[in-house]
Length: 223
Image 1 (cartoon, rainbow, N blue to C red):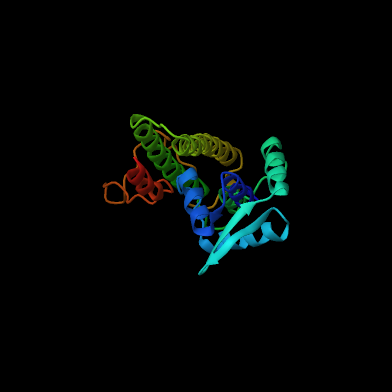
Image 2: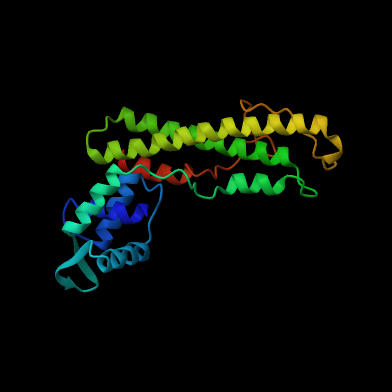
């Protein structure tokens, strides 16, 4: 649904080609959720089917210009006014992984938590650096502000996830202390602090594979 309304929002500014919509969407969101052109045209076809956009002008090769309709503007306005539904949250892979790992033979739950915490903290640090760089360059247009809003959401989400992982580890330690028979051999909870550095296996810094690494290129290219 977010792609659907994102494209409508961009079309409200004026008619666009599909490739332009893809580029503008990624500019607004800092390429945090990249689109492929197939997603764009599939969504445009559905919007056209629903009477929310119409083709405009003569097709130029494979490029078709699209414009928002009156019904599309009303639908977009209703979306802006309607709260995002949190009553049916999206599936979260990490929460599912931990839930499935509880009691799984041969699985070190605490190591899963600690590994994810290291990853999440690296991502949060990278996002924070990107934010500092964006602020230092002085955001001066709506695309810059839109990117900052998305970036700050990523920072807050990473902070919340790190706190939740700390809570998970504490809960696991307490459970293991009161139910030692339920813990797999070699899977006793550790006491690694979330504030510790994140070394690699040989003591060197691990290769950065965080989601934020994928955004660095965008930050370098636009700042």
